[in-house]
Length: 316
Ligand SMILES: [Zn+2]
Image (cartoon, rainbow, N blue to C red; front, side):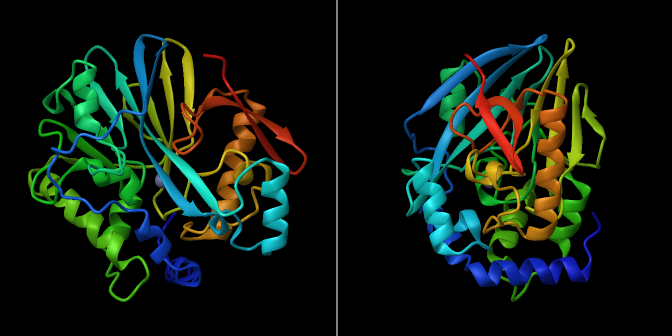
């Protein structure tokens, strides 16, 4: 989408109403050094055609449960969560980075939550897999939020020194806007700071909707969560995987109620349209999907259920 003043203002309004303080409270008190080793929570390795994929559970972020239904009254939300055996006070969002080894490229789909005692630690995890930070050749960023880019660098250098960093043109354009005074000022500044060394070193590539930015990896514009948010369709050897990223955050609540606003969607009305269309396609085409914040490893199938959808984890 094009960033219009209308969309920007809508986004700012939503963010202000919900209070980004809650968002920042989940960020780790971090040093930017890639030295802290957090426990590896889980790994799941599988083949997609000719590629080896590894889902890496990098962190589990906690958010107030109220973010799950920003346009829903508290009683309705509480009743839904209780009926589905979910906690009514907190939402736990797994953060899962997908590593793709194609044989010629080592690719990270987003970079997780960065280093710190309470968050993930991607580089030491890669080392457990026999890879160093220098081995990563491509980093594909879905959108600018901290839980997707904190692992990309420390503001002075990039964590993966030999990688090309890919971000959507729409998201990059948004980051260049003046965010002074907006609820997103802090996280926009953080994203610009983290990506600056890649930009300065010409290690940044911009991609657009439907572009095959690397062989077998196609971008799908899915705006609403952020202006330039992208999902991805992977294809290797005839096998497909749809990375839905943050088009839906919660595998139960956001899918069964796709019209419930998620608290950190910058344009919640657009996010509903995006969510409904993307998961509708996944259901109708019986696509294997991967949700960045779904319970680990977040891989499964989507079915239509009532006005919404149901996620069924794939058999390992
Ligand atoms: Zn996210």
